[in-house]
Length: 272
Image (cartoon, rainbow, N blue to C red; front, top):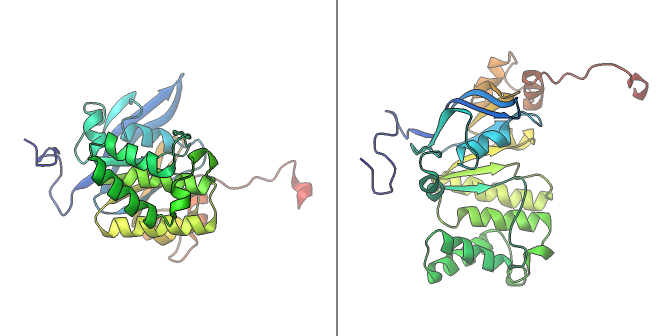
């Protein structure tokens, strides 16, 4: 049986809110190499969840499986109770995605792309236009910028536009893959404000990042993945404790310790 939004009523476990994102034994192999290795994960609804790991740890692969963009080799995932393998269209109705690598229609203007995205999600023309205008103002983009072609946008403007596209259909879970890479401090601040406002309104944000300061400031909960396995999960303070660090330790130190990132002395000793 399904609720009015199409999500199975039996999907959420007992307790306040239930799970926004679940993974059980999630595994993905590429050409004999295991990118994600039996990942178990649960993210409550309405939180800002930071998914952290070094390059090649399996973050983007996990996000692709959770959003239905890639099929697991083994295991299962659910977003608000919907399995992205069994119902890829249904899961895309309730989530928004900002990928790390930007591929879009660069011969459209920012406003045209927003309206087009809204129409693809079933919005009427007038409603898509209204929401596009609201989001452009929220992203601090003026009319001149909104009517320029995306090919002429800076990286920061492209990311703000694609974040607006990810929000235009009122998603309930938002996946962001390295949203702060390659953008200036002003754009990063604007994006942080938008995300904080969205989570306060009930949206669940699942994002990967290398910016530990942002993670520590914004995240309700974090998970750290290394070599395809989840090494720690919980609040920032809980993860510090799991790693054996006292309260107040900079989270960068905790992260480095958990992913075995000690710098070894070797042939570059002369640099010291």
